[in-house]
Length: 303
Image (cartoon, rainbow, N blue to C red):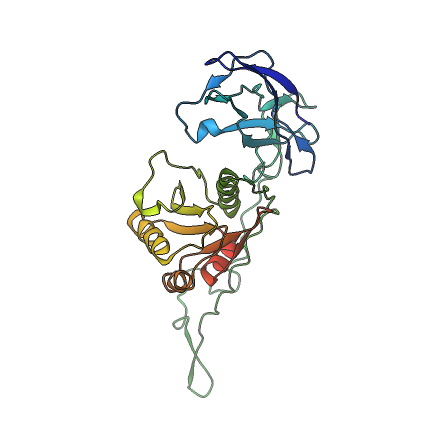
């Protein structure tokens, strides 16, 4: 359970007992945002994506994570933003240098720095001597090859053409397991979709402040090279919504992705298959599942 702190509404001066919500860390330990006792709450009059999240450190594994900003609704109608104690991203290491803890899912690793030496998987390795055996099997210096590389003459005078080998397909993208967020509200659905897109490799996934009419049936998420729509309603996504999202992706030269809680109409799925638009469906456990081939391809290759 989170810490129970008193919060006073600055609009009506009413006092409330507030307990911060608890979320599961990637290590499995419960984490609650550390609410600042005695700090004045701030009424929310304008929302931005950055104000919706706070950085919280897990007390078990010391991992930094992004969690929803604690909020409290007052009966007078005001929505209050409850302040959270800030955390530092550096701690003294056992070697005397700073230790950086990166948020989960970014692919970064722990790195320790001491003086001019850096340890970790991204530290530079020892210098290696240049390979001088690459041309051992070729002709001596100053002597040209006797013929083109693609054809060699046999003893019978018939040339044999050698074709280049076909490269193997790229291996599947290796990424850690996705940790879902239980969906209870429409905001939880948007949060899950944003976390899933970041897990796929998209960066700076945000919810634009301006709402576009083309995606009025859902909630829009954007990032560099990405246009996504999240439909948290209980109705299947219609054909028009899929077509509008696809056109939005074409106009922005970006990948278009759709998430839904209630699935898709048959015509919508058929059109998405035809234009290559990935469709995902989310259950209340917060785990998106691909429902067509473009979604399977996106899951396999990542962003």
